Image 1 (cartoon, rainbow, N blue to C red):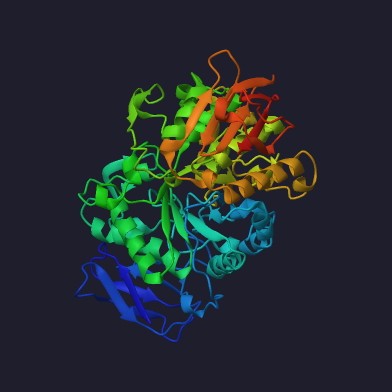
Image 2: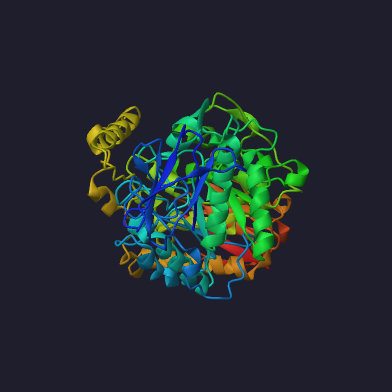
Length: 587
């Protein structure tokens, strides 16, 4: 087979090491057609260990390794993707009309493996979601972690089950009709096990990010770095038959070239979709509030298919909790007004002043030309739960009624809804920040840095969970006995009912953002919001007192779903909604 590696840093020689093979070392030749590339042919089979040595130095893993059996610092292993026996018949599942479910393999089950997660797919089918969104699965130090400190962007974390484990999971999901989306991290690599700088200019000091030197997308040598990232993305979609990718923090991808990397990537994914004959999509995480992220390339945008909408989350969170610290401050001044704005215009910051940033932020979008499906709406995510000091979910502080209200807003919004694992039953288990660094100095740096960060916000150091303590991960595992008891069972049934409504009532999946109409309680006159989606009306009362809501002369409707018993509006269109309750009305 052909072994090749981009190693422009090598001055004199690159050596392929194949321990255990009949011939253990091979001198590699410069590729005359590709600058900086070295190649050699050698006998190897699926599972064969190998690595590269530059100029007689230590043997390092392949930057494009498909498998790291012994972790990020170990030798790479050959993977024969053609050897896996896939089921036939998966035609793909598009993002339009989807309901996503964000899932972390390491805590979705106590076992923390792909195979264990596969056994719980029936729960997701009964729930009614259409796609599972996996948090990152690239190799990282130790056994347990969030995955955002991964390296080897073509490989799969071995403790989860390695490459074949991921394939079995995807195959099982497809067999029951679920699409699979993978979270990939292009904006930085973990500090441990990152050997890329030894091979080539994968990073540049031209730009900096919160993680240090930026990934090199526009400095000398960036052509190959961009190809490395884009080919990795296409490999996930092609070799693992994934349906889409979620791109972490794309605002941290510094690129001054005329053709932005994300535009190039979206074009490549669209071409692959045409080649494979099934829909593929890219979802961006971006805090820029810039509609150009999802605007078509032909119209001057980057062409990504969707993006997370944190503005919607922040507005909903402040309306539910009253929190006002940090970036919630901008939304907390008038949370219901902020929520109404995001429901009808997607972005809250659309050229408005952000006190959190100390400047004007965002850009307005054209509601008549932008499909609401391109924005993901959610009440909880791994970020919004796990980056809290205690990793506490909304269920730690909100009543079941308010959790039901949150579900109603998310699942009847004009956006593509997403749930965070366990949210559907109001899981009481926290989801905390945990790591398993094998380097003691790095482990202590993460531990002390976490405590310093939250001490600045008034938390006592002893209150902050130790990321390196195995009990922190254990506390974060879902408790699968909860869905069978109250109040969890009722919340689960409510989520199923709302998702079913979304599937059976076209107005709830209408992507026309401009057609959404919203009203809310005036300041001091209650805490309710009501909005219209075609012939569907949704009313939510976040107060601990009943709310009287005038829906107008056309407000007479029948009750399609209600958290608490409620009478449909009479001829006058007036609805009396019980405390901490919500209702979906239809004609």
